[in-house]
Image (cartoon, one colour):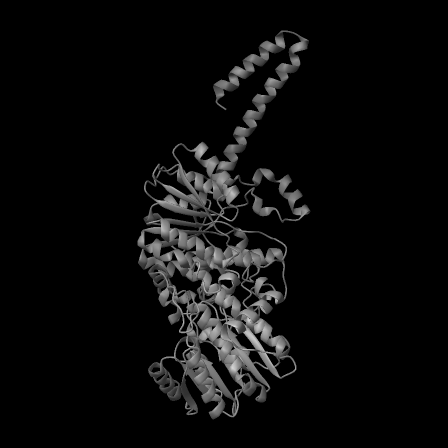
Length: 622
């Protein structure tokens, strides 16, 4: 409050006091207001020393920004500030709760004249939601200048994301990691552009537990939160290295201790302490200052990959500057090794001429197994066989023609195997097609469902007697985390009413998991174990049908995806690891048991799919 106002209040209080005792109370009240005003002014002066604000008047005309978690707290304040920097500046509020997002957008547009704000649904705990959000952005936006990865959850009870990751690591790190991965091509196209990852000073308490990233062995909410915030800092460093030449800068920021809903899980004693020291807690607007600083400050004054707090460059902890850990974290792949031999064993692998199928064949050939490469393209299979032979020295590798989109080819293949092979100890249903344009198999099935699911169901059915005679034996079904993307449309299983490439792929992968679950139950007591698995996001030919932007992003972000060798590890684990028999029917990821979706664990749905599949294939399976 201005000094002239204070003097006026003092004058008024003196006049009131002189009129008599009955007016003294009012005078004192007015005088109290003055002292409160003076105290507030002093407190603001003190706070300004600790909490500097970004005072830049930089305009963002024609720029587009995405702010995750923008329906409340510092995300909302960041969005409001950016929206006020130009009538042509567009801010996309990426929110899990769209109702709250719409309310936030309404608030911003009421407070900022001419603000251009839109709301888009995004649940960072669900990779399907992230994919759909990214697809929407590519379909509606020509540019993306700023991506502010702000959303987060803090110190919550143990929970998992839809995809089975520990909630804090999954949302705070992996969700934003994947979102950035998908949007990178648009950011590159819009360069110079920037990515801001909202971390925390708590990252200094963190340690990346590579042997227990999901907190399965030992979970503590504070430790898990600190790990996720350290991951933000490390991801920023690695991202900056990969994108600097592309014109995309990356920064991690510490917003300070802010009074927001993110602290709702903190226990009572800490809440009481926070209340007693509330004058030290920042407002959401103050907490947003450093994010805004990293958006509007000239490029020459910033260091890409740097850590910022209080609107200035700061030092992160030593762990936050460990490039080796950053690189290892970016790979996000659990390593597994085994010396298990397969001498005298026969393995059938579909789609073994390329990708993870080829690397699976290479590994198992090195272990001494007889490998039957079941491939549609025999010429490419011959090239792959020559490569594997040269690498492993194993000459016991044969190629057999198999087209999973044609039941006649499947039956012909099975007849040859039954005639030529004395045993099949391991069947690996690996081949697949991903998110292709709508088409049908020779038998009239939707291509992805027909190849990925029905083709392998028929193949397994035809070889099952030989597999049983070879017990102990295993059947390994390569599924995907994409099984969480959708449900089963049993009333339109061939997608004839409507077709969505992503949903059709997800349906086929869900069918893989359900089939493995049902088959395992039917094979109890036979010595045959069945497993389904997610290989990871792998650099393979499966991406060939994707949007060009996504394909480019995959190539640029190769370091953040698995190589075909890494992608094959869980398949190999399920094929050779000893002692897995008790896990028959289960779903695996990163060489360990993992949680499948609730839909994939539905035994009634699995039975209905079994019946529909048998009916479509014209087989009777007891």
